[in-house]
Image (cartoon, rainbow, N blue to C red; front, top):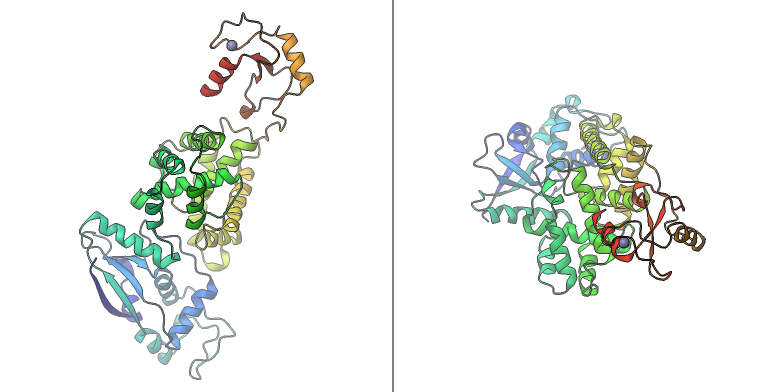
Length: 416
Ligand SMILES: [Zn+2]
């Protein structure tokens, strides 16, 4: 990777907005608060040091000369301010005796404009990426700049031994990932598959940082790929694939795990069969609304969406952040789909119900998938089966129960 350093005064930055892409694929949404934006302009006016930016040169692209690797908030803040997008606060301290309170760019006098325009940013230019793996290097650098984590962590986990590694590898091949917008650069799918598995093991939002995932790999070397957790991960991804059978631009790196949590809790607690399209329609509408909200003035934005976006940008792998994002999604989803029912919480037939079902069905298997139903089953060798599956809203009642031999019951489970 070849790097060069250049200095860009604000007066130049102001003019080159059209040739710089601040939102390449791996970037997160723009998220600075008004306070942070004002602080940047104030720092510039006082000549304080501002961290350098990283741009990636795009010699082959027609529209943009550069992609911003790091510095998107600083750039958009400068552009917004120079377009009178916001004013400095009413209680701001004077700069060298000149009051800046409540001033917008157009209200600046010559001295303030001079200070702003002549302020120079250090920009590190990442020169032309010749090969694909150099593009990876740029992403890697971006992640390191953003939050100190690197994609290398997943590479290291992939080198670990044990059944968890094998299981995560399997999950990363699930067709759901083909529907996502993001690519599998540096094992992104493995990383997200590991996070989904970690969530499913805990059964609730937990911290999903690299250290937590490493711990899971180390502790779960005997992980059962046929066990309930493994089944649930596959089932949730199957559900999501039915919801999103095609490539969906809204499925991004930063919302895939939250969406997974939402689907997982739907499967656990709600009558979810047949709700796939509802979930997909809602999700796309939600993302569309969120994106439109980002374009609005600070003052007219939806407070909850601003908070949601903040949560997708900082400490995203912390338990609290995930729990809040999930809560936000759930609240909106259930508002949009109020007819979704909780499943009957009693999944297990009582002893009395079992006896009634056993007598009524003459102790004979009613499913007849693997058997012909002629054999009288012993009391300790039959299953009470939900005719309408529990996951489809079937009640745990004698009416909805039937005798099933173990083979047929297993065969039905494997199909449904
Ligand atoms: Zn049977």
